[in-house]
Every structure is written in structure tokens, then in C-alpha cells.
Image (cartoon, rainbow, N blue to C red):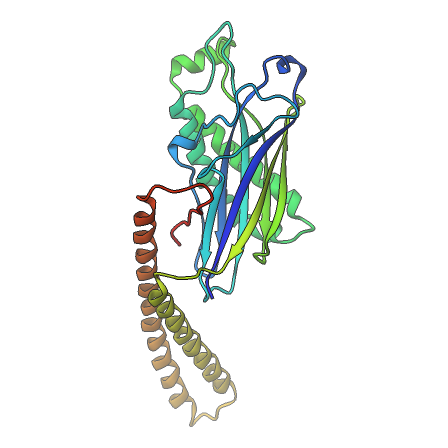
Length: 315
């Protein structure tokens, strides 16, 4: 049975700040990216352009709690009932916009968006390269630090590439300051069990924030793409059945008499040809399901949404 895994980020809490900003506070914003691994792929979400620098509260100070509005804080993915792997990973990066006092400051919008896109694209690649360490609770934190370093390098490079040479010169002389990173944290679920969580972010200057949220798991009441889901399930069973048949024939080949081996070899060849066709049928069924999901995501996305309504990414 299909399941909707929904991440709801409720609020951002300011825990502490460096003394130099206590009088004026900070203007924080977040980049949340949800990644998932199922039986077909590792993929993730990308924040909307309009949300890449959505200030959650201007002048935020220690003790303040700012709500994370919909849809920025609501991310979800539908795991199909044929998926034997259900892995969900959330990464949240907290920034503070550089305040303008005696001199211009703040990362240009184009550079913010370039960094945000790099963050959301580099994360799945880094997670894929380090998945074994991430899946093992004993090495997870160390692996997360490796992922942070890799993704951080990509983000810094993307932001730098989007800056003009004139602005780079001003930054180099100290006449201009960009927005700065507070920190990032991960939430990982390997069994899609509903739970509340808190992510913690801090920097070396004494700035510290926490994001409070939760994972909610629901079984959809009505699946408008159920026919396509059933086709994927049926085609997957067919592929599994042929694969099992080939394995069984290969086992028989090991102990077969010389007289029987040509016959078994012919059966293996025929089954292998059938498997190619079955795999293509499965790929077509998955493509049809994705088309259905994309269609309804577009239809639902064109309807004004109310707070609390989950967003489902195309799978």
C-alpha cells in the first residue's frame, strides 16, 4: 500500500547569538531539502525561487521563535507499495542575511538562488556517494560531516561564480559582506515511522538555532494513479519471476549432464530475452506512473493551497 511521508517544519528557534549582533538581532532564512531513496531512485526536492531567501523573522534574538510558513516547511514524497526500500533524508541549512549599516551588504538574489540550486543538486550526489556510512548509525555523524564539507564546497563555488568581478573585488577588500551560514543538520528515517525531531545549527561565532519539526506518515485515501501503480506492481512481479527462473536454470546448469546442458542453455537464453522485454515493460509502466503523478501535481499546484496541505513531489 502506498504511503505519504510528510515532513512538517514547524518553527525556527534562536538559541544564542554573538554579542556583536544582540542589539539588532539577525534575519535568518533556511534552505530545506528532502531526499528519498526507494526501489527505483535516489532523488530530492528543490526549494522554490521565491523561497530561497524568505526571512523568517527580522531582528531575531535569543529566545525568539519564528513559524516556518507553508509551503516552505512542508515537504513530502509518496512511496509506492512496490518499493522494498523506503529511506527519507532531510537536510536544513540556516543562513543569516547580512544587515546593511554603513556599507552595502547581502548576497545578491541571483547568487542566493545559484547557491540554493547547488545545495539541492549536490546533496543527492553526496548522499549517494556516502550512503553506506549514512545508513550505519555508528558512522552516520562522521559521514554527515563529510557530506557537509562536500556540499558546502559546491555551494560556495556556485555563489562565487554568480558574483560579478566588481563585487568580488569589494568583498576581497572588506568593503562588502555576503550573507553568512549559521549551520546545517540532517534528519534520517529508514522505516517511515512518525516522529518529532529537532535539528541544531551553530557557528563558531556563538550563533545557534534549532528547527523543530516532525515526520507524519499517511496512507492515501484515494490514489488517482492507482491503475498505474497496479501496472508497476504487476510488471515488477513479472521481472522478479523471470529473474528467479533464470537463477533456477543457472543452478540446474551446474549439475546437469552434458546431454541436458544445451536444452537448459536454450531455456536460459529465452528467459534472458523475456527479461529484457519485461524490464522494458516495467520501465514503461514507471514512466506512465510518473506522468500521472506529474499531471496531478500540476493540477493540484494550480489550486490555491491552504496551510497544512502537503506538497507531494513527483516520484
